[in-house]
Image 1 (spheres, helix red, strand yellow):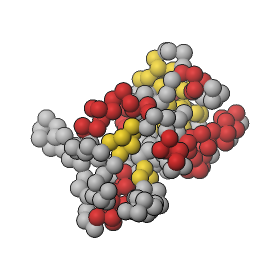
Image 2 (tube, rainbow, N blue to C red):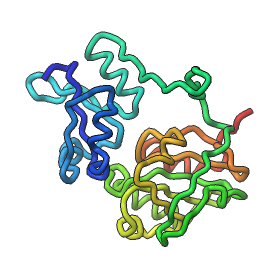
Image 3 (tube, rainbow, N blue to C red):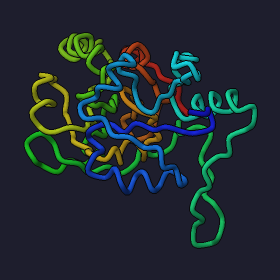
Image 4 (cartoon, one colour):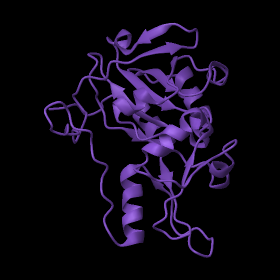
Length: 237
């Protein structure tokens, strides 16, 4: 395989939309499906999106690149040429919408999802108190590794700390089995995560009492737990 031949692995929970997703990856055709996260587990359960380089002799040729920008840098370094960014679909005025450099101080996206009881819940219902919005996947190895610490924090949150709102993929049962006190909303297609600009799981942002984004995205268990204990996240000023 040449380094310029991309190979993409899709997680099992995307299997139902895999064909459509593969066609949308800028014409890429080397897309494989895992049966039960066997590839992710072999690579020590990397979060998504993430990537590593494989040398021609079959050995691993790089550290894991986590997130879209790190992956872009990894590919650019391997190919010795810049990787073009994906073009954004123009809006009705013919101009591509600009992505803000920081989301801090912007209103949190209007999210309406089902909770574990099947009831529709709006993120606006959490206004009035600072909230840690945690993006989660029960099948994510890095999520599993931080679950015990998350349970401890959830059972004994710091004074003045945010309350917990988990936005998770997966079905009701594995999410209920986590035993968290905080609300859990189901988002099978990660639509809410994309709306918040989340890069994968586990990741989190703080939303303040007025419903405004109050922190940069925290990616990975240690960063998420650090954010959960931060009662004075930076705000726009």
